[in-house]
Length: 164
Length: 278
Image (tube, rainbow over all chains, first blue to last red; front, side, top):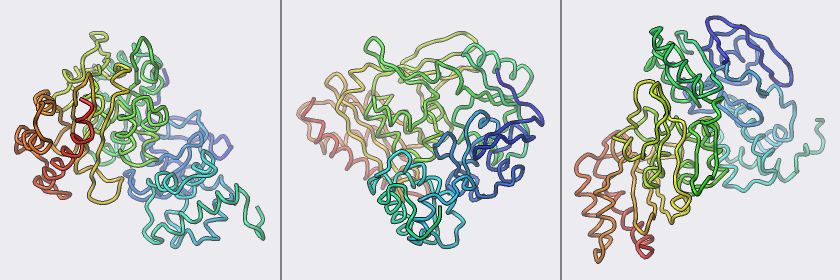
């Protein structure tokens, strides 16, 4: 049986790297990523699982890191926005103005990236369902959905003129 | 952040999980069983819950099973809603699961967490109530299998120290004709004003409701009313509403009257669609 108590050492695999960190069992993954590992891409929003600003991928699936205990994530592959590095979906967000203030953008990008990994040619309904966990208060979602469609159309290739 | 500490335990067998719970309780730690954690983590953050030990059941094999055996479908309590939707072995449950929360949260919310949780909606319970399924529980007194409709009285009546390990139902019930409606005030990810799950089982229509009352609703008397012959859908709807009475939920999302109105329309629609198959 695995047991974590008091302040304990935890190894997390984040963006392809092993990171060792001291945590409390009650620490959420969001807090540990931001405050202990300096990965500030996952954002504090509602901290209640509603807004999706804290979305990260665990083993390729999007989760809201404000509702995951860091100790649960040991042994899994965690991807934050820092791990995407100029992916086609990021390029498509730029091309289609899929963001304004940018606060929610890391969450949208990771949810969209996970969708395209699973369904390279998603339907409009699949796009809406997959992004249903993310709130944006600037764009009205149209640019975001357009960006996902564009990334899908390009089959994972970045637009011309931009270096990957 | 969660402003207090707890011990986190991840047992790898059912026996270990039950023992860990008993030991934590004996040590005065107010343990909770934990699977997806979305409800527990948010309740802890808001101070609505203060466990001293969290027992994560995701590594317990019985809680992760999804199988067909001897004509029965077995669904482990720690399967996520998205895993159930992807498997699609009980279409009414897939539909109800797809209505809960949002896609990202459904990667974490589990069957057991949803149906044994504290929120009033518990929509994944509705298809299981109408399916005639059973709940398998494990606790200090061993394992027991109980019809869900017996274990359920506004909430699952688990014994102290007991956890829900799996639900089972007949394959034939899982394949029955069904009707599902979920009505919300705003976006699709909102809590429901009403969720209605109808299932044809053994030639009869069964109904369970979420959101309409302060707890999931199923009643044998209502199922009886749904299956009277030579009664119009409108008359049946009126009789069902009278039987449920004045206990409809009233909150900032909707008045009780509006919920009653929604249910009436849903009943007429469902009976028109399923009635011919009785």
